[in-house]
Image 1 (cartoon, one colour):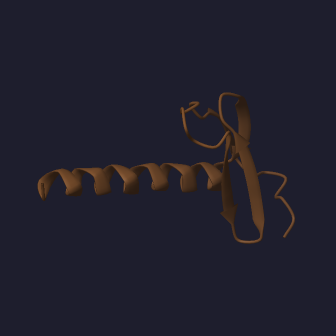
Image 2: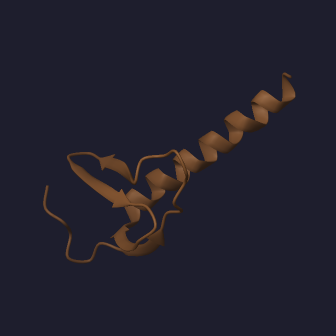
Length: 69
């Protein structure tokens, strides 16, 4: 799959987290990115959506775990 010439992109900076790996792997279809923590990088909007959905899912999981304690 070739990158679209008009594909939208966003600039992100993932926080460095003690005890975590220094990069985050994101895959969409046949494309993948290794996004280094602590560095400002430009990624396609589809990769950003995956990161955002992952963050929302983790937040929901934490909220759920707090309700069953």
